[in-house]
Image 1: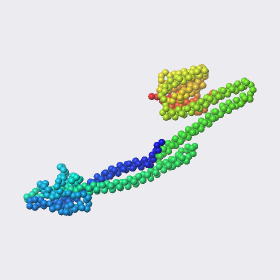
Image 2: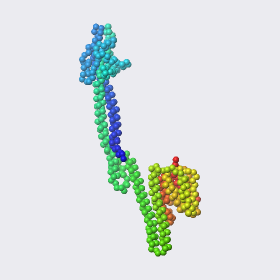
Image 3: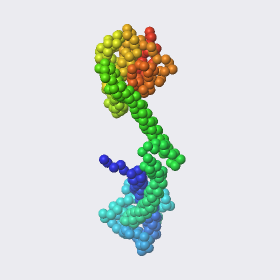
Image 4: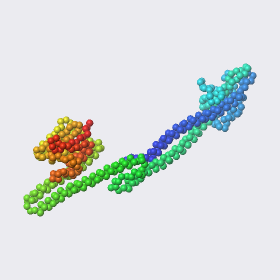
Length: 462
């Protein structure tokens, strides 16, 4: 059997996955924000270098020359891990100083609005390296020369990438520490929250098998009250079931003890006699008592079958059955008994009536209803077995009927209205249990002529 995972570990695992996703998203965001911050910082330095170089551009003998001071490139000495490239073009875009083929601004590159200068920033590739370039225009206005000189300064992006990675790493480190702290906090919080469940488990384990008292609600959180209520409800139903079983066993023992004691006393009395007639009478009486005991034992076994059948129905074992066909077969089986008792048994079931149920239990229900009706119908009377839509079964007799104030009690086990009438008092109790198993409604009514009409309303099948 697969061992279920721990609730505590499942919560921590789900939280850890969420935190990892958040850390990755935050790390990417921190990297791009760091890259943006690095571009802003280093772009200012690039522009400062370009301005320093532009300050050294002068006109001599009708041509431009560039005096590039060391400080223009030394600005990056202390905070840059990359290389610096520069280029100075005259007003005709001819190289007068610096590195050749330094990439020009792509068409449509906008002028920056962050600084008061004719400058454009852009990314490019130079000598196989990614570089960040600033293009600064320097106005030249001389009597024999008028136009714009261009100064380009480029820096490889190692410093920017390093700065962005450093910011991202620092962010991830802080988030990692926060995540570890959050997981530890959740661990202790979940452990504290599960402590009432541990107390409930201990309380249940320490109880005796016959201790079915409700679990206390005062020591658990509000969210656990539905669980404890459900357990208490289940315990209450279990206690009621045990009480019913205990009461049934006591009643069955009482019902069996009396006829067994009478049978034993009768046999002992017969053994003392010497006349053959007394022996014969004793044996006949013993045979009748044995029949009653056999009937009672069969009724008790029927109750056990009802419980098993009810479990099968609850587990989805119900079948699609024709109630009319079941009634017809039962009527044919009970016809000899009705004829022997001088009672007319009639069946009214013209069309198939479909329902879902357990056939053995339904046969037991029909048998008990018809047998009960035959037992209380005088010779010359009538018993009608009727089936109608949607799924209604009726058994009507011409017997004495049942008073209104006793109709609820007849479904109790071992209840008999007339102690002088043979029977175990289990017939209608069995019928009631079968009806509950099929979620059917049973009711008692006055017959159309006289006697009693028992009506059972089932749930119609598909």
